[in-house]
Image (cartoon, rainbow over all chains, first blue to last red):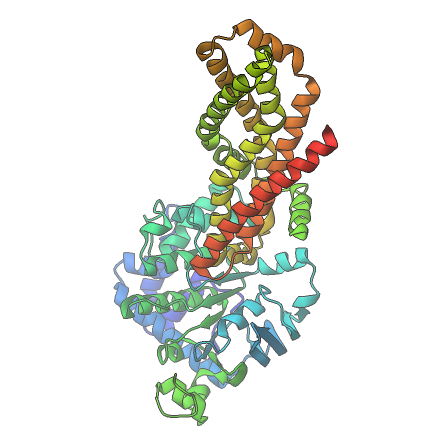
Length: 336
Length: 235
């Protein structure tokens, strides 16, 4: 199988080529779409190759989704057979953390590969969110080391840590949208506060991010006027707008109905396909998560129980993992 | 708590200056407190004049009512009552707002985005407190003296010349400075304590309610305690 295109250079042309290769479209259709995209009249949020194909009538929205899923599945297979050889972007070595006298992380060792979607799963209270907060430096470990791109996180000065954090985005479980700002200002916030980008350039970027999460036209609404799914999507738009190297997602689909959950999974997949951004997802959406992630880490009792390609973890014979992913009542995990 | 104050002080000297946030906080703490300050001060001045007249008339010293009201207002009641009213109106809201931001992970979100939360949240409130409290205290003093005038002159029949003439003769610049320095210190105390309590709120709604209550209680106590020491130093 041919390797997926270089993750460093995600481009619409490349995505178009992959649509062609997967048999979703024909060469003349791709040529039309690329011509439409390069037209000076074609700008703004609707200028993505997939949307142009839909606009030109070559693909229906469900067909576009199906194409993206097919490409993604192919990529998952590739990563399963060819584990990433580049050094991990994030790593934890023997990390321990005690909270309120309880050992939450008990010697965690894990690596987050670049340009992959990594899922961290495990029973509730198993230390997943605490792990995520350690990865981005929101919590400091009692012992052990956390490194970003080989650089020890604990040894960074406050200023350097701020600079490192700007390479990341975190989608919080509750969205963490600012109540006093409307949707547009929430999404524009990181650009205004952390970049020198002028306001006239911020606007198209924010509108594009909102359009990518299917929230075009909702920019004047305030967070309390949004449903749970919409809030999550605004938070995702805010996480995407800075084009970070790594996106961390803390239970992006928790508390949502299956349709919205599915749409958020599609959004994540869609974003990954376009940008090849490294993503780390905490989720309970088993088995769905195994369809979407390249790499899965299972946490149990503050330790890494398993870590590897999604399929290998899915097929694991470890009784703890089997019980968890199949949701069985009987097994080594005690159900309270 | 002292580290938080130090961090806020240092951050307030470091760019970027968030003027919009500062103006928003000045509007919230200052403009939106004007009505309550006016209402409190007019009644404080009126009751002071009433009590003062009753006491001074026993000694035949009604002519000193103007200076008594003005000096009490400018040196003590103005800064202390303004401080207590601002603690109740704006300080509690400040603690609750920051507490809610904390429990909803909005402060963590700022950190993750690389926006220093103390710089973004505490500094504008701190600077607004320093700017607004002396201004509100000045307004409190003026309205309080006018409240005293209403009672002393319009109700009790003291001559207007006696009331204002006595004030002009008795109030020195030092008295005004004393009141304004106290107000400035109370501005620091209120914004420091309320921001700190909200910023480090924990454990959901109950934590926010606890943070708000303790912010108001501690600020009020600190205002009264520091008032004593400031008076002792500046007398």
